Structures are given as C-alpha cells and as structure tokens.
Length: 489
Image (cartoon, rainbow, N blue to C red; front, side, top):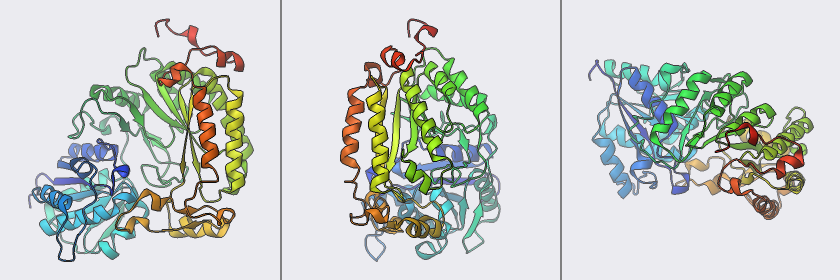
C-alpha cells in the first residue's frame, strides 16, 4: 500500500426503511469528509442512503452468502473502490445491521483494508461492533468525535497496512472548532442547489447527557465555533439555495454571550432570503434573545419535552415549578412578538403516567385559551428507546424507579429494525394495563389542542413568517417591533 497519500472510503449505510432515511447532505459526513481532506487524505464518500434511494439495508438473503438486489448494487459500488481505510458511519441504531453488512462486503472484497466505524451508536454501544455478529469485521471502533482519529488511522493504514486482527475501541480526539475546521458544504459531493433543507451543527458537547448530542451523550463541555465563524458558516450555505437552513444543535448556544452575539448578527441581515430554524430550550433562552430572533427570519423549535411538574420532579430536574413558569413566560412573550415557532413535546418517556400526561395537556389548553391568536404550532411524538448509556442506566434503572418496560432492549439487532419497535415502551406501572407503545391516554386530547392552536394561527404564521398583527401584542402588552423595522418588510 502507498505510504504517500492515505486513501479513505467514507461510507454511510442505508437505513432499513424510508421513514428512517436521512437527509441527502448529512452534516456528520460533511465534517469528517472535509477534515480528512484538509489533513491530506484522498477521500471518497459513498452515501448508500442516497445511492439506493432509501432502500432496505444490505443483508444476507440465504446462508450461502448471496445478497439481495440492493445488496448486490451496494457490493458493486463498494467493491470498485480501493482504500487504505474504510470509515463506516453508524449515525443511529437504524443503521446497525446495514453497517455490519457493509463491513462484511468490504472485508470480502478488500481483506487488507483497515475498517473503522464511528457515529452515535458506536459511541454508546461499542461492544455491538467488537463482538458477537460483528466479530472480525472492524479494526477500530471510534467513540465520540471521529475526524482527528480517522485521519491518524488513515495515515497509519497507508504506511503499515492492516496488521492487527483484533478490534480496538478508542476515544476520538476532539476537533478544534475554528475557521480552519469549518465543513466544506459547497464542495461536498452530494450537495446540490435547491435542497428542501440543509442541516448544520454549530457546537459540540452537552451538559444534558442526551443521546442526540453530536459528540455522544454527555460529550464533554459545550463548545462552539466562534460566533463570527458560525455566522460566516451559515451565510456560506446560501450558495446552495436550500429551502431552509436547520441548525441541528440540541439546544442553540448554551453560552449566553455567544448566543447573543450570533443572534444580533443574524438579526442585522435585512430581507433574509433563506429561513433559518433553531432549537432552543426555554430554560436557556431569554426575552432579549426573542427580541433578536424577531429581527431575523428565524423559526424556533421550543424543545419542551413535558410540561408536567410531577414528571420533572420524578426525573429530579432542579426546581421544576420555576422551570415551567419560566418556559410558559417565554412562550407567551414569543407568541406576543409574533415569532413563528413549533412547540415540540414528547409523551411516554419513562416515568410518564396518566396524571403527568394530563398535566402537560392541561397546561397547553390553558396556554391556547389565553392567546387571542398565535404564531405557534404544536408537535408531539411518542418517546422511543434509543441507547444513550449502559443498559443499567437505560433500562434497569427506569424499571426499578417507575416500573417502565422496554419491550425490545436491542431492537436494532432485529432483521428489520423499525421505529415501532423503538416506541414499544411501557412508561410506568401506572400504564402497565396498556400494550407497549399505546398512546391512547394522550393522543386524542392532544390532537384537539393541536387543532385549537392551528385555528388561531395568524395569516403570517401560516406562511412561516413572523406576525406583525397587533392583537396578540396588545393583549400581552408586549411591543411586537413593527415600527423598529423598515416598512417594506
């Protein structure tokens, strides 16, 4: 193998079905692809999710090793590409079976290639890739951030070839977030103009110990690109002209100074052509932040989860009453300003009962009753089990504390993993009389309240725009800011 320019094949396996398909431009892949190229690697990216159009995963059809039609096409795409290092992205449990199958194809076609796997699922369940069905397939499992470690592995693979026959698990080295490490979306092979949405991460690390954090659950101290760099990153995405730019951070800007600086710069853009969506936590956001959001073409997702003080107390959230009071105050203020937003809720997480679900629904009913009109929409999903820590923390502790039961603790290892399997959960002993995944205790009433919100949407909010009507503003005695802006907006 050549020791000059390391060759890397970056592969994203297909999900099991179309509802689990990811976006055409996956920000995790863009970041890895960009950094490997900056560090002198020759990188080819193969996103089988895109190539196969959301087709089912590669899997062996019979014991003689034949592959199905889609698997055959994947094998052809992989087999014709030579690399020193093959880096397989397993960004969610849905890709687990396909990641194993892709690794098998690479191992059969190119036995001397070093194979590494990275992503959210290897971060929280590394043993799934080091033993059992995965035994002998992977040389490396990277936990956490992968860019720097993969570049080092590629250089070693190019110089030494595949020497080890055991799977090694290693912690990824954090990437320095600065102007030099900004992902190169414009030149990413799967990027194209006029995408329905283009997602990007501006930060890493999280204090919430959440499975959806980019760097893995509880992935260290929150850090971000400098605010000016983050602004330039967002502005640079305009060249692809997506219908919307989505900032995918689990919460936007835990550092208030960073958040305000970036929001002020975003608010300073007149007539923003491309809408921008942010996910925020009401306990981290402020009225001043809402003022800045109003100044830009920004859509908010309020990540509430629950409005039940009883559930928050059971989950040991500090000062649950004060947290809810602040969240509701911020919602009222944002609504009075006319900021377009979505209230995102989750029902059925471990600890949920009929009472806690009713508390959330009651709070929503009171909220919409107090609004003369609204710029908010409601969205809710059933809680789904995605591994975020050890089985003791994920499964056994909720069972002891709440009587929760997860029907399929390793659903991603089933032949056809599905969202329905992930949602097959009994949240508490109070709901043990219902089948796993049953949502009849909250879904019908939520639909009524959601429709009540929709009926009060302003005409501007129906188009996804901020509202300038004075009704909601006057009712809450909150200046909506119309006269602070050029009249042609």
